[in-house]
Image (cartoon, rainbow, N blue to C red; front, side, top):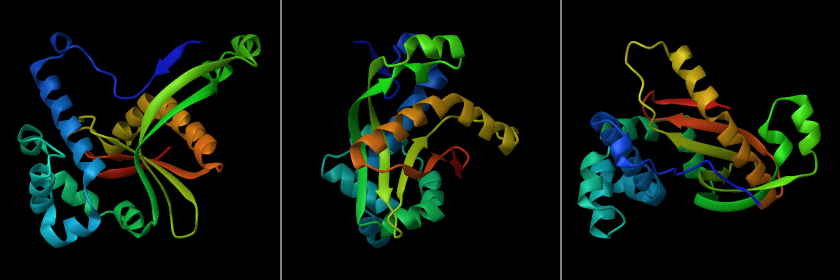
Amino acid sequence: ELEERETKISVPKFMLSEEEEKGAKRGNATHLFMQFFEFDSVEKLGIEGEIKRLEAQKFIFPNDASLINRWALARFFESELAAKMKKSSRIYREKRFIINYPAENFTLEEEKKLSLKGEKLLVQGIIDCAFFDENGELILVDYKTDFFPREMPFEEARKVLIERHSRQIGYYKYACREMFGTDCAHAYIYSFSLNKIIEI
């Protein structure tokens, strides 16, 4: 079997520019916070207090804490998505999966689809967040820290995110159906760079 890894891909440091390396570290730090924070603690302690709590309890290291974008997190906690997540009684963060994914879905060419029909490829990954909302619907969320220049129009940046990450989100939606026995009602990218929720 072949294995397709779409998440948490590690790129050798020598292949990254200094700015890209800093951006990757900031992204990893933000993902760590999003994995371990508690809504009640954020409400009680504030974002800075929650970062210090996570650091004290060794969930994040001081180097990570210094890289977390407080302003971007503040915008997240003001969002409608955060409000829905907070209300959920069934929320899963950093949910690991290994699934047999239909090989035909890896191509858009009809001839290749036919030749691959019935074949499976092993896909593994980690879903940032999946939760059931107050209506019992399954919501998938993937956090992204992709950098965009300030002068880039939102619609252009939105298209870039969708093109760049649609296949990955497709794996996640399939994995959610396999793990939870129901289709995702909605699948979102939350962009910390744009401070926007984008439905895929």
